[in-house]
Image (cartoon, rainbow, N blue to C red; front, side):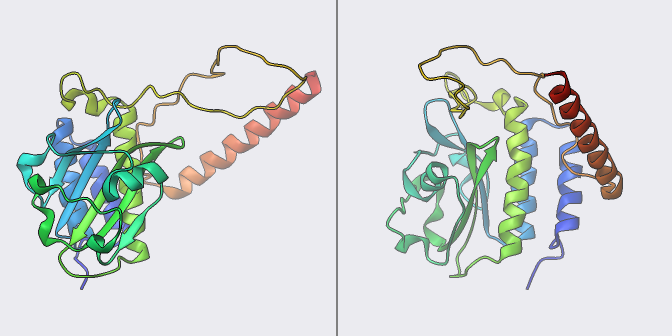
Length: 239
């Protein structure tokens, strides 16, 4: 039986309300995990954020031991959370303990939970953390529940990218915001070239993650695509 919070439209509205509140980052994360736990009828919802030292730190939880927040951690590749971070893809397990990558963190009090769903927190192809839900019963999570987690992960990714979580990072354990990025290019001539990457435009800062008027947003998108096409035509003509 699904919670009365179920449904993508209501979930998006609740997420938008939480993001709009003038509250601190920790309180916002705490509200998000409670919201998601209710939405997918999960007994546990947890957020792990990737630090600059390659460690995934528990930043918020609903259902696990709250004292483990900012204390429990896993390295990338360690445990199910670390596996998700390493492979950047969801993991949906009715019996998490049976998975060969399972690693138990006694300080979290998670020994009572069997089913596990985790999705990577991604932005621009980079893993910034992992979002997890758990239940005591053995169950496989539904497709819409996976999508609910992925939608929330997108929101959390923007919080990380905007620097909002830096305020609650532990001393000397900054977030992983400066890893080198590999970009493929097209060679115009043989040989080796070295240089600096220069952004054509400054990074776009997203301030409204969830649309209130989808028709208006579609119109804006179509207009932007048309302007982009004209810009490319002008560029080709001038070359």
